[in-house]
Image (cartoon, rainbow, N blue to C red; front, side, top):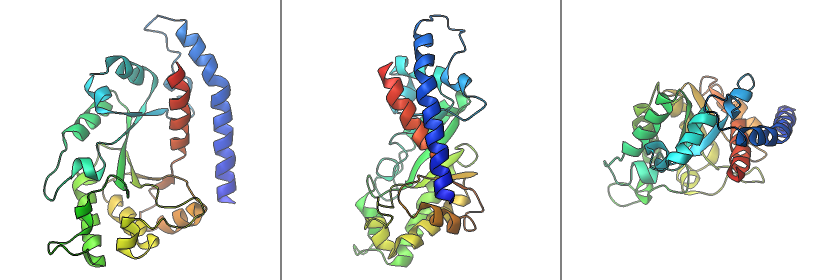
Length: 251
């Protein structure tokens, strides 16, 4: 029932966006007035946040044209790659926080809702995450500690600044089963991985996100809420981000 209601809400919101968004864009294109408040974030300010993905070129200002669009139109941002494990912690003990720091600074400077992306993903994750000091595959206990230390180092650095985290990304397949990824295999099963990830992340963030993919989503979220102190919500916003990104790209 919860999944059905969620899907009805998502469809209703997307229909509203598809109807009103082109009208907003056409009216916006005809105006060169910088004080014109007919922007996405203002039109929907009483309904929901309007988000987009950003890159270092945007947050640094190297792509000034796109940065101006992001600042003017959006009030929520998700980083594309710089918080993923392969970029932020490519080797043991080596961290590259500068691009992620710049992303968070950009969001704060422009009073945006900042989403961290992502703490656990099978892609863009270094092989050393799954190997111990002896060069052997991690035991389950060693993998739990690797997960805990990674979340503490990354999410902990931005505690109180990043408003929400995509905790586990794309772990459930379209048929509702867990994907046999490096993370899932290292933990022995997906339920254990996801519960530990949300437990560790709950100590660092006020809101935890999970993309609603696969048939297992509703029951999984229900089981995770006690573990993560009821901080979890399905990331319906992700659908809205994609909708706006696709439409806005035509502008």
